Length: 376
Image 1 (cartoon, rainbow, N blue to C red):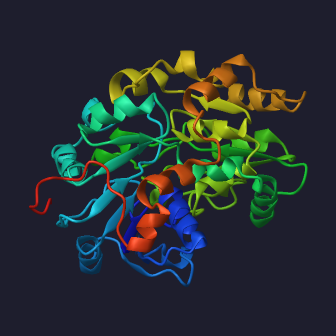
Image 2 (cartoon, rainbow, N blue to C red):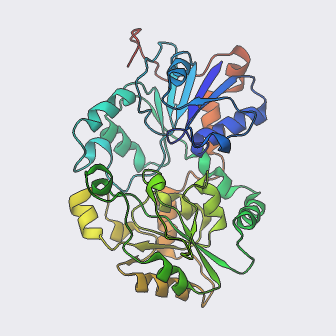
């Protein structure tokens, strides 16, 4: 069986990586091929076969695949064969409105992405809240499986403490140093409006990092939509981890997450560590730019703060006494993280790669397409 995998337009990361590594560890003798961005090939293991994302070779691989696994839209043209199963894992619990529910999108963008959605045979959901939102926003009528995200299994793994120590050592974070992970989302108007800077920060990163103190380190992780457009002045006391291959390991390494409206909050909450929201443009983002599916002020696991001084003060407060998740945080976990129990990968493998399918060479299918014409 030929399995073609993709994550974020050619990265070795996220749920497709987790499923791939579990299949190889189990010993399934499938043929695996990854779509890899030209500047990310070095991040793939040397024994992993790759083709360049978006290339003619990538198109040929997809068209000859038995199974396609991707965590995002495959944003280039290819013809889906009738016998192919396309599993869309997606990549986050939506607070921000997505696809058909957004307030604004560039002309033609949603229609083009609809071509990829039409190829999906099944979609993964991290929780019961996301399932109806995905169905409506994507206009997807196929099966949506509430499994949790395989990528998050590591956050509950018995090896998480060992992995945390290894990642912190890799990043040069000494024992006793508090790692603050700043992971803001992207702004549609900055990315899609001509003449507007791709990414700007509402604070001076240098001043912010210095304000944390010498016993803290600021890890900056911007969204992959803008990670290749970031320009940090030399000498700024910030560790840019935007290019780090897989954010879940940064979640393990971090002691506190500072974010705004990013779906990172839902993943990081699995760790049970504190989350602070820097929501300086809340009204604009919520009411004009993108829109939310629910009231962040009511649901957020941590405080919503509007200035960098407030964020610094909140981080300082965390160091004054041991932190324990309160009722609000616990409710957030119960609502959005109940399936993140370390066994999401097992559930997905049981659905799409059961041992009997491995023996027969045929993927499991749920609600297969009935139209024998290739889907574009």
